[in-house]
Image (cartoon, rainbow, N blue to C red; front, side, top):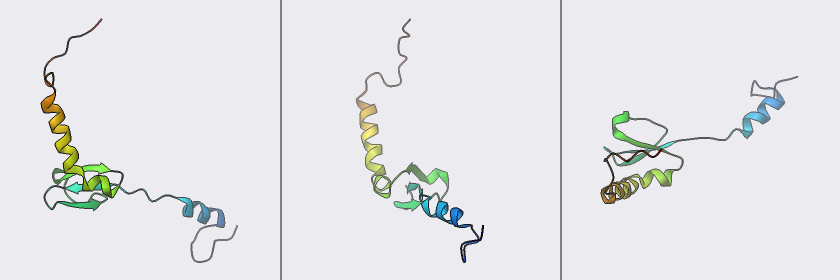
Length: 84
């Protein structure tokens, strides 16, 4: 089978590659307060990954909501009874 012109791939290989979905991850950088596509900074500065840029942009809001939920959970951090 011949390569598709200029690709170095056979025609079926080229078609398969065209069908590949771009799967990016988005991270929120707490130092710069910017969203990064794919991890670019040190792990200590990042929250994520998120599947979309919009979700990464709202990372701090999600953190606030989770913190409030944990603060409101009277049983958080306390041992829970084991049921048989």
